[in-house]
Length: 277
Ligand SMILES: O=C(O)CCC(=O)C(=O)O
Ligand SMILES: [Fe+2]
Image (cartoon, rainbow, N blue to C red; front, top):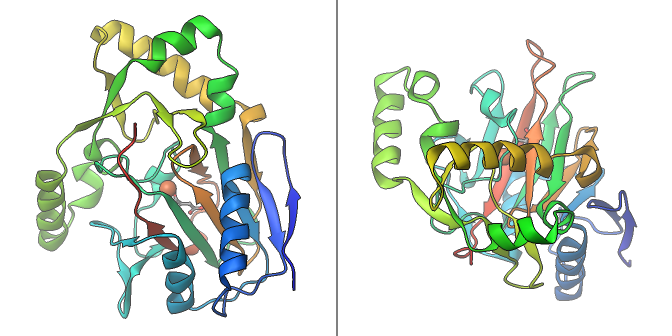
């Protein structure tokens, strides 16, 4: 069976069919998926009723998996975290963000599987940092290319929402201690494709290091708005057993919070990446 790749928008996104993620994929399939990911930045697959083990096995074909410090995970498969609105406050995913940029080596990508969905609502959007960067004027691209920004775990995981029980509080405190604010380049070069992408996100980026507070604040506001414009983004309307696989090095995403109190359950396997440059 050969892979069919259908692009969904000019900036990013493609639907893939002709692969069954419940089985071990071949080396050829793995490489074809990686090529598609590099080109389209987020891939969508329909009708993939996978177990957490199968999800972790698929994701692990692309790198080592990350165990999230805060989100609950599947007991027998801790590499798969659970985003269940009945259990966890997931409102902070309704902010444009790139996953775990509070780490020195943020995720390469993530594989997200839709387990239980509201009848409607709960869409997710992705935006291309490559398209956003390339659309900026040359003078602004030149300025941004030399800058670094601070990323802070506590911006998207505030104590008020993640420290309600003594265990939660202890976990949050330890995570904060182990993940002090750090710096990443404002413009990142993709380690494989060499393409440049805007790499600041509203979820975790707090300031631009080389600028004054006022300058940095204004510039970040501009960049957050620019990077998530409709023409650089795609919106996915989930069906149960859909899988999304995104390149977290050059994209950000936003989970729309419009369906509560209905329940929504997603499983995520996160692939470790390398230090941005
Ligand atoms: O629930 C979603 O659609 C996405 C949540 C999210 O931000 C993530 O899984 O990284
Ligand atoms: Fe996320």
